[in-house]
Image (cartoon, rainbow, N blue to C red; front, side, top):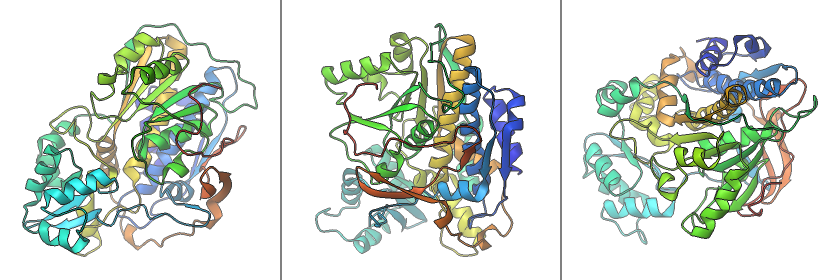
Length: 459
């Protein structure tokens, strides 16, 4: 499918004006990375939507529209999330993460966090202190794939059985998902339009917008990073007691970063004060998790009338899996992408997509949805709730169709698109942002800093 048509579909679903689409300049065509899926179009269209929506909010604040150009190769490489720190490229996968043969199929385990890894090994009957990968592979062969998936879910772990597309479609969750749109933007309360500072012609379009980013892994942090690139003050809020992944160095470009313990009354008071000055609240807790702490969408709208609230989930808000933990790699496996990609490659082994495109595209949909909802808030008032999920993005990606001979594409050189900057982690080299804004270029003037580096106070 033509990426411009894909962008048009996203744009119209967000309720944004067609005349703004004339400002989009999309170049390139799939395949740009080796895949039988339109991963380049998915990357390019969602990044363009995020940048164009930010510029549309700038236009709503009184400045002229500007051109947004996105090259597909650059966009796809940006979505590979490659980075290095002081010349070292982190290994982003734990030794126990990945695909395992079961007695009747395959299972993917996500073990990047110690508690998930140890829980999976114990479920396999292994001692986490001494187990090696071959031990886990042998133990998994005594399980049926879906039995292990169900046992893992019951224990709060993250593992899934591999399915074909038709097998996924036949599941209750696949059926629940098929009726859901790519994203939703819903009014959840009444409020006056929130005041935003005057915007100079040379200011980035989201300058003066304050965003609370309560996300931790990839999709949410990517969305917050995009908003920061377009000028927003983004405050990453992490728990002081929860682990993070090394990708936080890359996804924290342009952000403030603070620690707040929401299990304490004092911590919830601090977040409440930040919320009182925020325009956008992004959260990636499982459904009901943040509401139990007093910051669900309705509570946030009462505390801060006019807020744009963004919720990210793995499998959507309907169906038996709505509360299930999940990551991009697992959703790819459960929904049929790994099987289909392996089949297209002509081999018997399942094959992942060339990047975590469900995370990345969902992240840019978060940024687009936040800006689109702010446009409505400025025009109509009200409080707004944007909802996205990795599985909804997967369903949409599948609908973009397949790329003939896409797996024959060569792996491109990322060097022309890299940029380096000092950070609190060391010299950080990563992909530059692929959305080129003609008048106010995207930028991350704030250096990436470790979680907890800043006080919980708006600048």
